[in-house]
Image (cartoon, rainbow, N blue to C red; front, side):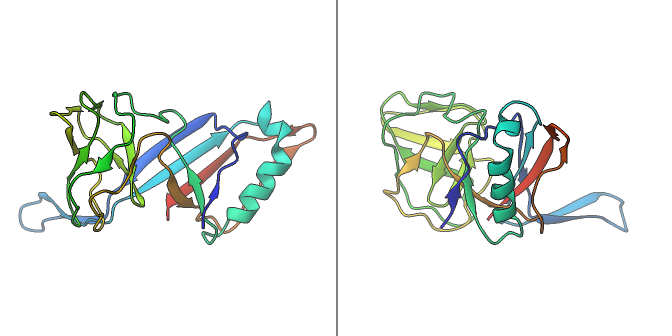
Length: 196
């Protein structure tokens, strides 16, 4: 079971990236770039914490958190601190309208009439966090969402869609964790997290 990132440790910098699963190579005959794409893309998150203010006040707590999560064994839940809710109007209790299959590039939701999502909005369905590829608007109570990242497996119809702080379960792949100090201050820290 994943532990939530401490609420009082708000990052000052955030990089939220999708890491594609695939291979690229140059053709030895034509020199053109060729790519093989797989369905297993994953999110990677870089968190930056500066040494002043809250970080200094909570440095012992952060030290313990980083040490506990180092090594990729213990999981934590995070959300996109910059965009915790969609910029579109999707609210209420949306659900997945149709069962998904591995590799789907869109999901169909049952939503309140007039619901929208904007490009880059994040939603959680099952164990995945999805990003809307482009703006979309509901037709009656059906919202078809084009996705940046594909569905990795079957998600049953009726599954709840999380729009408020959808949780991404991550691990810290570094084998050690902690902070660096100077007398009277905690130095800035960069933390890499990858989707579990």
